[in-house]
Image (cartoon, rainbow, N blue to C red; front, side, top):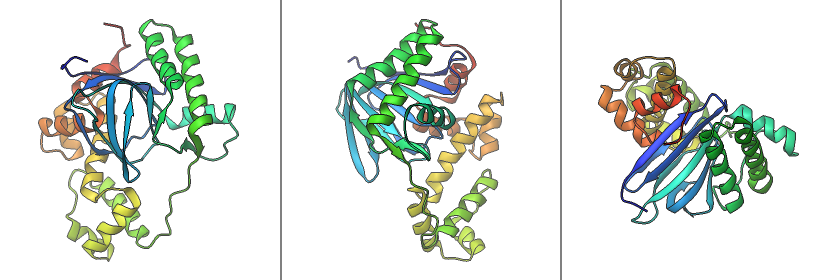
Length: 278
């Protein structure tokens, strides 16, 4: 593995409902974050380590990292040499359709493990990338359906409903709604707790229990997701940064890269055109 870091994030009109990432990272550290999509990451070289579900997972070449939507996780190199991977980000509707057609799962499908030694699935993920690079939409879609069906069969199950009856859950839900509505100018923890009729520490505990991260970390993650939507709509970077509450474009760029893996400008270019090899 070379010492050069590089990443390409894109979406192909030949395969709607799926984003793709091909990257080599060495010093890269992903902050605690979530995805609105599923994550199917095939490690091709080195080792990726990531926090998920209260433990650190390590995945080497031929392995798969599997993340469900809205699930907090991180990412960093598991060895000094870093890691390379090819990733598919299929949206929830696409995965649900494949699950209904190919499995007996009834409910919200998802992965019951975060890491799997599964060279066959890893090969299929890479086949999707390769087929799109060659402009072969039929092959790409075929491999996509095959790998999602295989992963759900081997490593899947029905995701449990979020436990909203936990003590303090209503405060966490209301706090999230406030932060989403006032993203560009959020309240302090103390003022938010007072507004909801609870204490700051009680709100912090409830929010962590519900979402796996404190409110300020969740807000940064939500801002990046909102920024993606605005960038897809064509809003300039500086205006996007202001609209979601970042102080300036460089602030947006720093957090965007720590969550998505590429700068916002590179993300927008990759989403705007069909990927071509080289």
